[in-house]
Image (cartoon, rainbow, N blue to C red; front, side, top):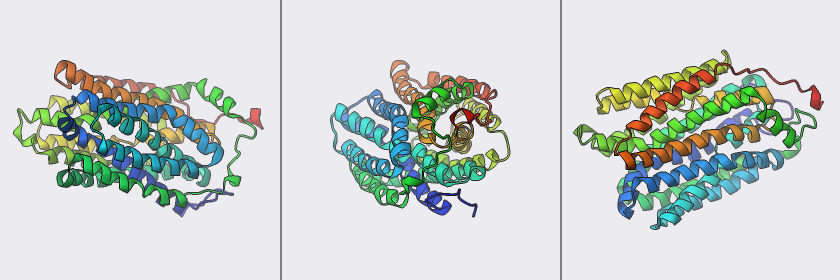
Length: 410
């Protein structure tokens, strides 16, 4: 087992197991929200834009407040933040389950769960990891944690589909709310000794760190690229199921809801391998080139999927390829942030990059519903996703991964 850095308050085993469990729950539950799209809108008489707006708001709040939550975790410790996040996650799911009013549903699923995700997903867990794992193993460990979250996506899709089939969408959300309370005991296992926080940058302040990052060209390019990641993955996760339902009109084999749930589960399964190998390869090769390759490959995969005749097999193949590329950007992007700026304000700075990701997520979720309602088709959004993939592939190439000179703050 690789060594932990001097002064670490948690072992590598603790961080990987319990950090992995936390993101397994938090990322796994949210990955299945697309399965609730049609049953929730049908039961309440809403259009798809209403559901899409809830998920879009969730992603926007998650991204906008992630830097704030990250700063709180860096300053006061991640434990308190994770406990509050677990409580909000449970309340948000329960609120979605009992809401028959669109505004209340959006507040529960958008506001509460968006807040909860700032405290229970990668940025906070990676902050703990950065403080307790040696630098030479950091990107590998980030890949392991991301793979755990990916396994949660694979695991939770059939669970959520089964709950919907057996109990209906509303009661399924209530049961998921109870499941979310498991995040609370997990948070206790990740409680750090806050007196041992890393002070890598001497007396650098939060304001100095923000100014330094905002003026760094590599940070700016990384942030733009992450926007594309958010757009693509959230559009697919939220709108793939209704896209397949529409395609079933000409391809009856797609009419079974198990095709969509199986595709999302395949994404989660292959995501495990993609994120793991991203961490492994990130230890050996320039991470910017790996990111560029991921975005370009996504653009190609999407183009082939929408141009080729659609069938259950083509859908599963697309899901496998996209799954391998799905969150493989996460360990690479976060590792570049840590490599350039260090770990003192890592949760905050990774949160800033993630804000861009969530702006993309908002656009992918909302534009999917809006443009569908306007045009009766998802074709325009698929084309946007392809163009953005090519754009992200290009802008990641000039990124410089070297650590900044810290003598200014010594």
